[in-house]
Image 1 (cartoon, rainbow, N blue to C red):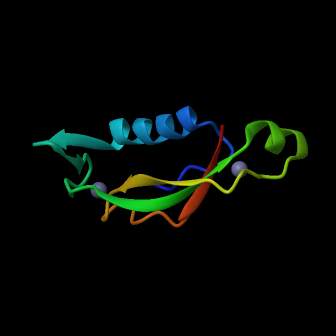
Image 2: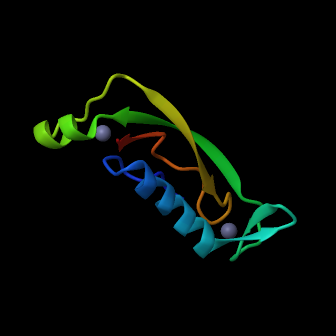
Image 3: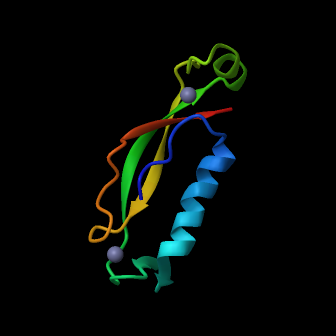
Length: 92
Ligand SMILES: [Zn+2]
Ligand SMILES: [Zn+2]
């Protein structure tokens, strides 16, 4: 899947990933496989900047205290390929 665009809450971010996983992949022996092509789902590590919600919404400039986290973005190597967006942000 493509990395969700920045600017949402952490819950929204996780919900997007979860929704995609439920729709496109299925569990098989503790792993996920693609519903379409049966490939083993891979994960890409992306950087998630943690921005200050109040500041970013008032000024419309994404900013935070420089905190960063990482997230795992699942993707089917056959149907989707690795995400192009390797960093994003959440507003908390
Ligand atoms: Zn941001
Ligand atoms: Zn696939």
